[in-house]
Image (cartoon, rainbow, N blue to C red; front, side, top):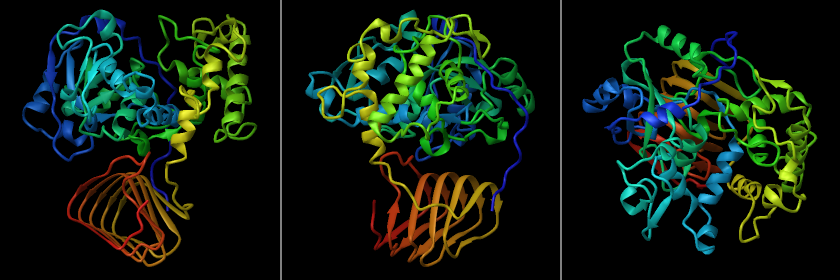
Length: 464
């Protein structure tokens, strides 16, 4: 079964640059999350000072938030960009090369504090006391603020992320991250006094929401993900492809268009570069060939060609492919390095991580949107994808259940099931999984953390 409304005819929007906001930030407002809550309900729960901090935030303020409180304003990301970061975050190669692991640099940069300075043994990005950054809190510069991400305060104090979906998803999915990890964001606007209808109208007028999916097809506001995490987003392969062409076919300009990589991705999709199809994004050599073809097309397009409302030159087109260097040199040469090298390329890291991500059985029934009432999985594989299930879920012997990016209110029970996989699931009710025949997956690389608000019973299950 499938539920959910048809997409409305909205066009993609681009947000304005954040340089002015980055230069303006006034004080830091603390906005702590609720323990164990991995979703936007934390921001809108009326939890005393947390909601009050959001409601009083002004444009330019720095707001300290937990990742679980943030609501996305786009429906898709490039999985492979996140996979690259997670692959590198989990690798010891940065340390073996005498460097600090990139995840600490990325956190410090995103928090407006430059790069990492020191890291204690066993340090975790979810514990800022275990490492230090080069710029102390309160000593931020205009340049360091420019690296921070942005948020809009919506009705009831809900927090809508308007920049940084890839970076913050990487933090949330990291082994030492999670939905309770804190980060500071720059407040772009406070629309908490608007009605939901007026709020989304204001967001669209300012180009602060992208209402298209991974195929550039319109989606509605109701179809936007409710939480951060791989399980909640669609995968835009062309967005990943463009990420790997950076500084090969294009360079991010000083006055970068918002959704810059999505604009290039939509253009590449129209050029007939098939992913998958002509190229296999699970094979390093084929993926690299796709990057070369795409980046050469970007470099070769006339600079005055209008793409997504701007010229190719305004989008950062590099007139000299790979900065004029041979394929074995420059950024393309770095990208080509296999995982066995001391400094692997981004594609190698991405594919190495992708190989660890568990896959579930093929869906025979898919549930999306809102569904109320008992859900009995008697045979085959039922997938809940972006669903809000209210009522008990029962999985019969031999049947399988795969849940991604969904909320379930009610008990979930599986006895003798084939496969049970829950990723990015907020379950309010008891979970009981007994004697699964094939595999139980609740935690794994690329499996967005779950939140279980109820007792959990797991007995006699093969675990991935």
